[in-house]
Image 1 (tube, rainbow, N blue to C red):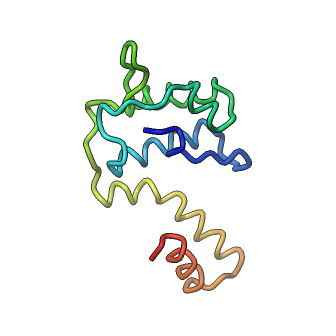
Image 2: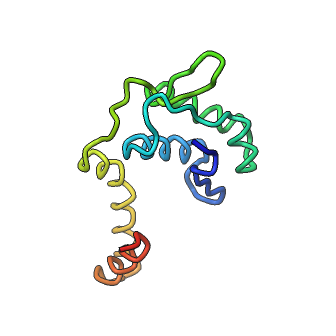
Image 3: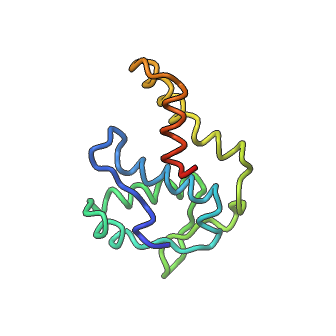
Length: 127
């Protein structure tokens, strides 16, 4: 894995460490990160994204506590060997559900028609 695989949004309301953990969860669930794959070092991620190394360390620690990652002596953090290769579509959709609910709420608050929102979403997804 390369540090550029993570997308950090410093101005987002969600804390950076939470952004990292959530992205790792999704990348593992989708099979983009496989069991045993070594992650970039805390220093590499922090340097690439110009963020505090303690933030990355906290994210990695939370992911480890959750069972997503495991510490490999002398190599750093890797995707836990016990993780399934790819989760089912319904399991992956469940990870997306909070963002979909927020999107629907925002669209309703802005009184945007569903078909316009869906067209824009399809365009963003590349469909």
